[in-house]
Amino acid sequence: MAKVNYEIVKQIGVVSKSKTGWTKELNLVSWNDRDPKYDLRDWAPDHEKMGKGITLSKEEVDALIKILNQLDA
Image 1: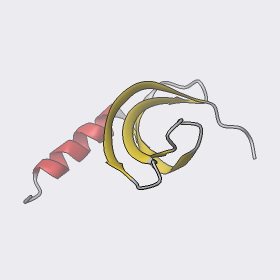
Image 2 (image 1 turned 135 degrees about the vertical axis):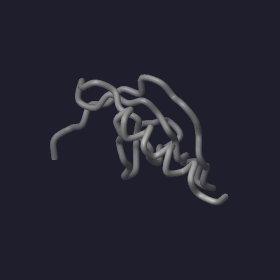
Image 3 (image 1 turned 135 degrees about the horizontal axis):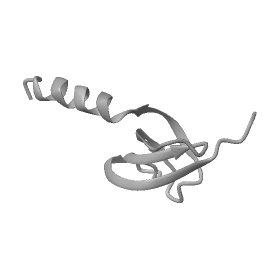
Image 4 (image 1 turned 45 degrees about the vertical axis):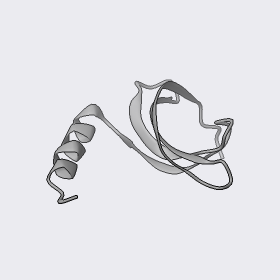
């Protein structure tokens, strides 16, 4: 498997933390030297390992915010 290069450009916030120390985080991440995107995934405490996640463009984040704001909380 090819190595994936990434750089966490900006740490935005932690959504949750597990007993093992891994955190689900929203960050701005550049993957393989591309423009950064919003990224939601689990990270090991040292950010050397990661779980599966999703990446979203600014437009997709804006659409998600609109959808979430319509939920009855």
